[in-house]
Length: 75
Image 1 (cartoon, one colour):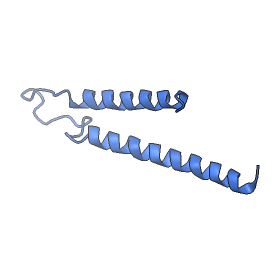
Image 2 (spheres, rainbow, N blue to C red; image 1 turned 90 degrees about the horizontal axis):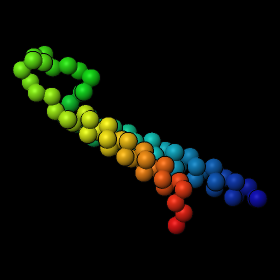
Image 3 (cartoon, rainbow, N blue to C red; image 1 turned 90 degrees about the vertical axis):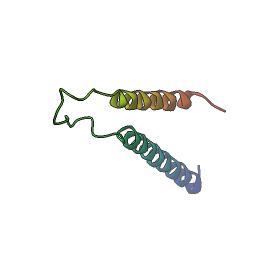
């Protein structure tokens, strides 16, 4: 292997990791868009809980599974 191919491989791996982290961060931000799920509302007894945090977790899990499946699928 020549140096050019080695450098290309390293750059490709770094870019892949950066893009995946960016996608994960974007999905995390989109799933928290409705509010902060860790922060309890001041009048917890009067407000009904929504399923937005659970939906965000499902999206993150589906994205993770899709990313793992993509590793094994060669096109």
